[in-house]
Length: 308
Image 1 (spheres, rainbow, N blue to C red):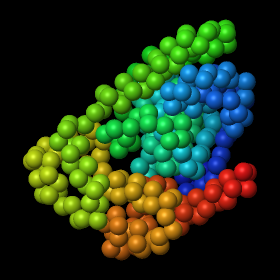
Image 2: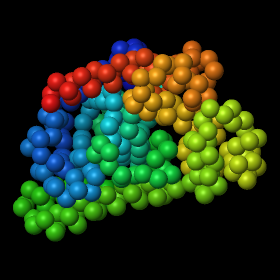
Image 3: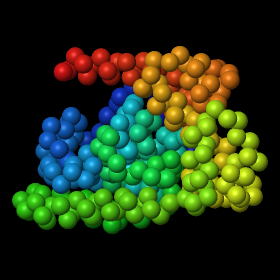
């Protein structure tokens, strides 16, 4: 059994956390000056990385009680384990991310992970800047943990860091930054869904209020129900119905952030006649009840306004 985190006991009370025990080694590089995270202080700044849409990247080695919680991820986050392993919160539950595995977390979801007791964890990460077009496309509907070799990415990140610390000229830094981006894009391309599945999910996203029984989804994709199940799991790690729920909750999160609509209306827009069922599902997938998610957004807007 994996080590339990205090986060798993009271998910409704989750807040921003950043626990990095003594001995944690962070080898990072930032894409812009003025990074707000203290653990990035002292990391070289490479403008070329930011120009490619990447906020920061690095390689980290740590152990228990390392724990990170970001309550509202504004850009995609990619993480790949080099050795050891940890737990990542994904699709409503903790999942192991061990050696040779990678996870892609899309904007707007709870971003939480922790190191297990007695198990050191080394991983590399790439954080996409808010609003950047990196990782857009069919794969932006995917949030899975899957097998992937992280070594090339770690070499690219460390190469960029060393080149920056050595004072390499901008053209050289740009080439290294491109290697970082190419490594992450290679992961995305390796999971490009079948065109028929893409067509289905695009149709679903245009009409989320529809009931979408399995028979109708299979018909739109021009596939048998069983073939659709196989292709959906290969592309997203989820069954068609589970991915339908994921798309609905993703749209609901966007509406909670961009409108002042009541929860009942948002529930109806994404296909839920019962607001209670919608709220329960939203909490399972996103990490908080809809009301808490909306409240966090209001706090963020107020803080930004005061900062200005």
